[in-house]
Amino acid sequence: MRESAEQDAPSIEPSTGPPTGPLPLAGYTVAVTAARRKEELGALLDRRGARVVHAPAIRIVPLADDAELVAATRSVLERPVDLVIATTGVGFRGWLEAAEAWDLPLVEHLSSARVLARGPKARGAIRGGGLVDAWSPSSESSAEVLSHLLSGAEGPLEGRRIAVQLHGDPLPDLVAGLRRTGAEVLTVPVYRWVLPEDVAPVRRLVASVVAGGIDAVTFTSAPAAASLLRVADELGQRAALVDALRGQVLVVAVGPVTAGPLEAAGIGTVQPERARLGALAREVVARLPERDPVLAVGAHTLQVRGYAAVVDGRLVELPPGPMAVLRALARRPGTVVARPELVGSLPGGGDEHAVEMAVARLRAALGAPLVQTVVKRGYRLAV
Image 1 (cartoon, rainbow, N blue to C red):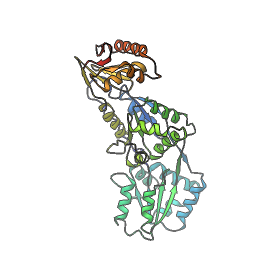
Image 2 (cartoon, rainbow, N blue to C red; image 1 turned 120 degrees about the horizontal axis):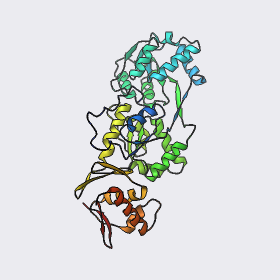
Image 3 (cartoon, helix red, strand yellow; image 1 turned 180 degrees about the horizontal axis):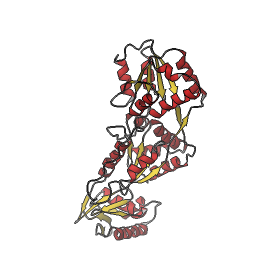
Image 4 (cartoon, helix red, strand yellow; image 1 turned 60 degrees about the vertical axis):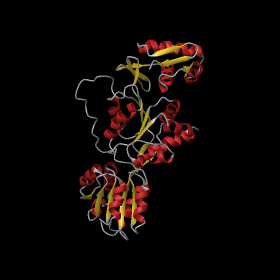
């Protein structure tokens, strides 16, 4: 069940003064798994400095010409419907338009029903189709719709006909909850979500997450989350992906339903208070930099980000080798890290000479005496 990320999303508020340092997401790589409105979410993150990786994990297949939608519509038309639940604007509008193309009197048939809208977009589609919206939840969630109906606010449900417009997910909790009351629930699948035609970007995303090249992954639908896990499973990388998403990668879901497949796999998520793209982007802005503390190193400040360091408010992008050494030193500020241990942190491995070269390049790039050599022992940050 997808939350309302497809609703109108307020953009991140512009800053009120000149920037005093790097943008909040500069130096971080953030993956976007969304299929719809991916450009919008990507732009919100890009404007805050993120390096955005697009890997749509699903694609939407409209069912306007699908026999399943025709059959569902004819079932709705067989007898009067008491309640209609519109879950998405694009889906409900598409259903009405498809019925009109088939010369099926759907709008007239639904005019006597109580039509509930899950959110503003669905409400707009109801009104645009010539129907009247009777109620919508403040949370814009299907769970609140179910709670409203089970409370008796729309009268007893036993024996009543309820049409539920689906949006790619079967909404098992909503449908099962209504059927347990004795209602006749008619599900209308307006479109479905399947794997993208080109799975290569999703496979690359799995590899990048496992390799430590992604700092945050965003999800706007439960099917996208399930799809990423499925692709990783097919690659034999599911355990490695789950470990990475449980550890160094920030996982941001637009809401609890979207987070469902991730939570079931033991992957913790953070979620915005409202299921909106703008709120989702703001959550990334708030949560990602706070994971990396600002260290006082002598007279300087240092923050180690995904592929860059912020030194005294200045962003310094680093190659993989020096970045790996700096990250290993920053994990234990002030503690000496032996050369053999630093060898193990180098991407692709190497030897102690490779560590010495990486440290030399690191010092040159940072432009400040942050890394100390401890003779015969290793290196440390000069905390």
